[in-house]
Figure 1 (spheres, rainbow, N blue to C red):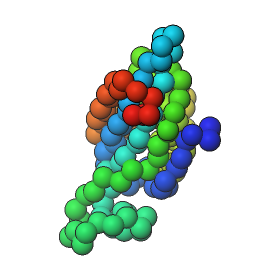
Figure 2: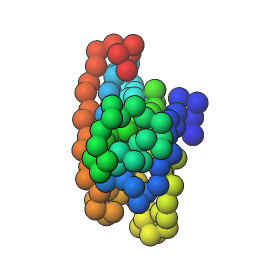
Figure 3: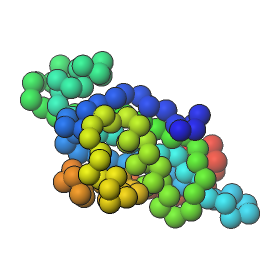
Length: 132
């Protein structure tokens, strides 16, 4: 994992109810494409409290989105952010991935589809490098 990848929290795969990826892409003057990626998971309030998240006194049993990992700057064309998101997810989530490794899952979308986890992504193209 590069120095630009940061794991903020570690959660168990069994606790993940949903996953969302927020990415930004930037194209430099010679056509190189770079991206930043943030991975968040939907977990119960109890799991979020164990991570030390400020959940504003939400009732027990409610779910909350928690950012578990982020990548500040990576090279990659098209939807390469999905591959980066999967690497971040694997670094931040503990669990049994053997079944998914056997079919060579490459993106977080593919993994969530096979594991029947809600998945959502949002990618925005930005005009300046500093907006990543």
